[in-house]
Length: 519
Image (cartoon, rainbow, N blue to C red):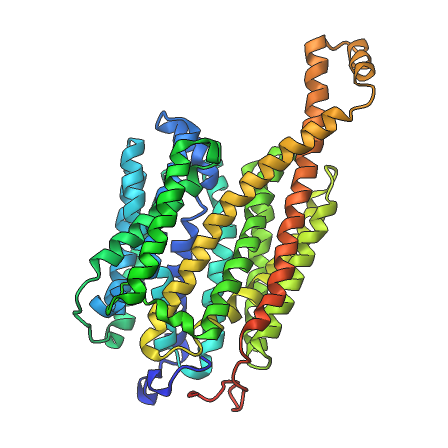
């Protein structure tokens, strides 16, 4: 990887090759896939879970929030966990624990029980995302790093797209516990194979004093922020005292965390890495880009189901097209990364994604299924062009000892951006629909005439009023959706310019497309 010191490379006699190398990359990529998949697989199953456990759908959303909170807390702790217990032990324990806790989730008989197990699942799954990336950078030979990183990065992109489709299929054909059971054999098998593959690469541990204050502050501000984001829409945001209190606690907790971690000798999250311009700009760009990209990923299935009459399964098929083209784009991205400035690749990817998003500003209610697929194809192709080079840029100039922590913070920012984006897009969409409906209702021409015409056609007054309201509502949803896509597209355009704040990456001076290993 560009900028990583030579002493991080595995000695030549230990370099994995052939099928062994393929197995290593596959295990790491699949572990990441399972952890990311769990963020979205339950989204379309909330009504099924709520009905089975006899709770309100608004309460059922805690199934999503609880996992997201636990995962978001654990991701930035990965660097400390890897130092304290060893990256291989953390990885294997996490994936085996993920398998066993998935069984418990499927066996839950009440909502509090399921929420508790989802928190445990997030604790197990959170470290898998950055630690799998760290192990990839430590084990894969230097000349294969970019290709391996592209394969690993593709799962980060594909998993959120596959989640709704798989969840919708399970909900339509099986029962909600299978959303958890289906992952168990894969997780346990991956854990067994991972120990056999990586045990010899385990590092010496550092038994340093635990930064308990930093840990508590991290749990406090991340937990309250995620709970606020996950429940704000249901509680009418800042009209709720509970949401306002959570926001105040999150802000105060964040600033206390910031001050403490910058002054502590052994911080649980090392923030000094942000002094590196390549790292800090990468964090800013991944936050803006992944947030806007994920926002469209959230909005499309909501719109398809609410306004276009699609089932969860059909909406999932539409989203899955993004995943298919991301897989196609990943190896192309890895090739481009060996030839061109990463900033150009990210910029072009964002411009493509912005184009795919801004095209949707002109969507109408009579769009065909095929017409809806074209922007998904383009955005799916653009996704790896944005995310994979940023992964490389984020840790390219960090010293080897900070690789795990840097990967953890990169994935933390990405996870947090997706949570903030989800809440912001849903709130913005809901408000836009209400605003457009009020405007359309005020500008409705000859509403009495339309009512009379419907009643003349045999509808009662109430039925006619309902049909008229339904028509206005449909147009309001479409116009509100167009407006949100416009905002997301503009954010992508701004982010495409922001990437140029990063310093120029080292020149690719050698034959394998890698830059000099030290700088």
